[in-house]
Image (cartoon, rainbow, N blue to C red):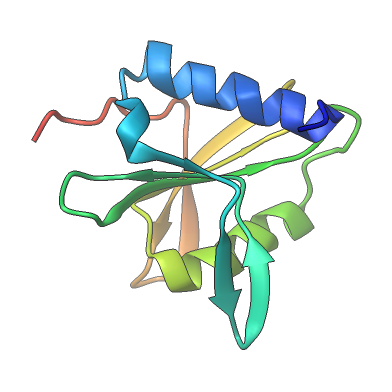
Length: 119
């Protein structure tokens, strides 16, 4: 695997999830395919709950790429399929955490990613 700038960010996110969030490696899945509106896409990082539901989906950008509305729109499209509890967007320098308010179709931005319960 080539260590591209985006891969550098992805590897740091995985370390954050393992060390800071104390998520077991077996619950983390990196760069796999999913289908959104008959189109195959690749997500960067997904964290599963013990029951197989999705706790978190992460979109990583290279450090020189600014986080924009397009980035949030991209992860929101992925989340139509994944129905994650939380979303994270990062370029390694700026990190945004949010939860989707499905009823009102809006983001709720969070200062930090809540620690996942051990349930």
